Amino acid sequence: MKLIIKLLIVTAFVVIISWQVLSLAAKAPFDYDKYVENVERLEAKLAAASEPEANLLLISADEEDKQKGRDIIKNMIEGYKKLEHNKELRQKVKEEQVKLNYRIGKNEEAIRTAKEVLVEYPKSEPASIILVECKKMKADEFISRGKFEEAVLEYKELLGYSLCEPCENYVTYLMGEGYIMHGQIDNARICYSNIIGNDSHSYWGKRLKDELRKMRNR
Image (cartoon, rainbow, N blue to C red; front, side, top):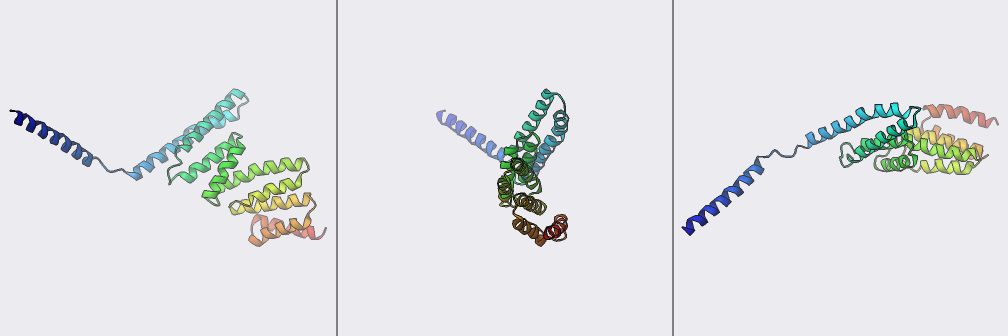
């Protein structure tokens, strides 16, 4: 009788283990494409559902509404941070964080994130544009106080990053302007000549050809 009971226990144990193994085997394999699709849908929902509301609140005359708008943007930023691990979306997610931080006036955070993006994704246009805009604000502040050399240093730092070409040319132009204000005409000529050398047919190339002609006549 004891032997029969033991056999029944062993049989039941084997049946349970076999059932669990078969259940695991029957489960569908991890569908990465579907996972990416779900993440993309979440990302789109974040951008589409939240940003228009934030836009309206941010332009409100009511400070409480503006704060609500900033809070929505902050929540969006946190939402994007959760998607950073996804290789397919990482660049776009990081770029969106740069743009949103800039939107709510968190310029230092926008600068930090933009630099990270440009290290990981050289020539990123959104990161380049916002990094240049934030640093230009700093340079303009120096210029307003007559500190032209410090303004030039802000632009020099920017050129240490892999900016998209239009932004790189724009920064070089601004640096040339800073040199002119500082009375360093020869350095300005070098900046302008570098842009023309990179692409004489671009907007900045054509504009700076005229600037150089004027400078020669000074």
